[in-house]
Length: 167
Image (tube, rainbow, N blue to C red; front, side, top):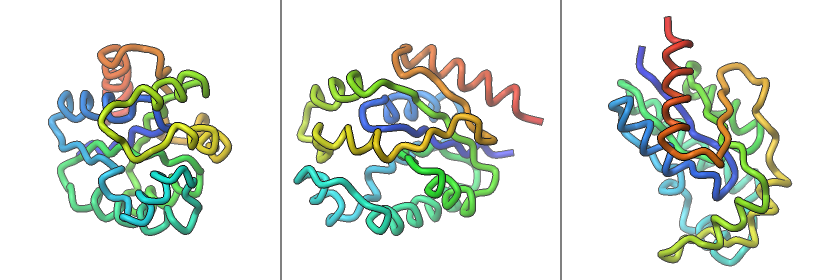
């Protein structure tokens, strides 16, 4: 059974780092969700304006298509902040599993503020991500990892969870 996994959480939680580590361990491609934002959405976030449900709808559809395209499995990084967003992705890929990187607002803000290289996501938007976040804890197919842990430990915990969930 191919592994299709979304590493989710607010900006600054470490989705890209954990996603890359998991993709390597699982031998599947990494899909960076940020790469699929429209130019208009990137511009909006670059100006410090939070995306709304309408902005995210076509993005989520593109991500669902990308997951379906990777028949042999993939790891996708995606904020997936609302239950409705996660449900939309599950409709595209019913056996989808989520890894939720839980982080506190202060640490997330520090990490986003420290980013190098002109990332389009502005630190001022971190608060809006927490305001939008509907915790996935308790949903079927979701594993929570503390974002404060190092990436190797996070990846180990996730791969143990995947192994325990596999038939």
